[in-house]
Amino acid sequence: MNTLEEAKSAVVEEFSMFDEWLDKYEYLIELGKNLEVFPVELKTDSRLIKGCQSRVWLDVREEGGRLYFRADSDAIITKGIISLLIQVYNGRTAEEIRQDDFSFVESIGLRENLSPTRANGLNSMIETIRREAEKNA
Image (tube, rainbow, N blue to C red; front, side, top):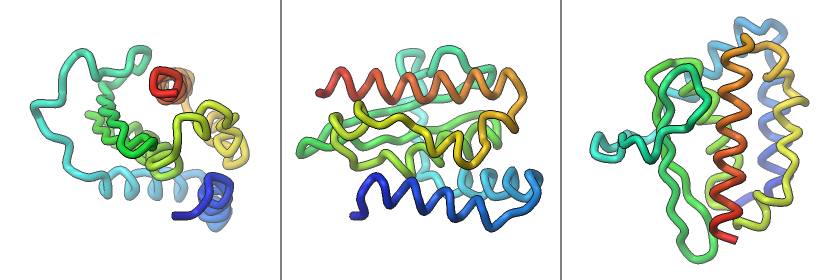
């Protein structure tokens, strides 16, 4: 497994291949399609991320000192965003996640190229991942 810094750098590099944000949105949509199937029985209110305009479910399990995430959303762009976060943080220790500043999101220009409601949703996703890391630290 690559380091957290390597994973973030890879995302920045992938996004730098696209000149237009429309292409970056298409890439996000593709990432969302690659999420593992999220079991219907896990789509509970307790797994819903609060603060997202669309519905986003996040399931977290700790195994061997590492956190593993599964997620789903009813909106394709949002599903891509949570997929991107999972790509970077899945399998990391709680301490790695807690200490990270999630700055790669700024590096790829994601927040500034989202609508205000989607940007709020992104913030909620990040805060939920951080909160889960705090609970498991």
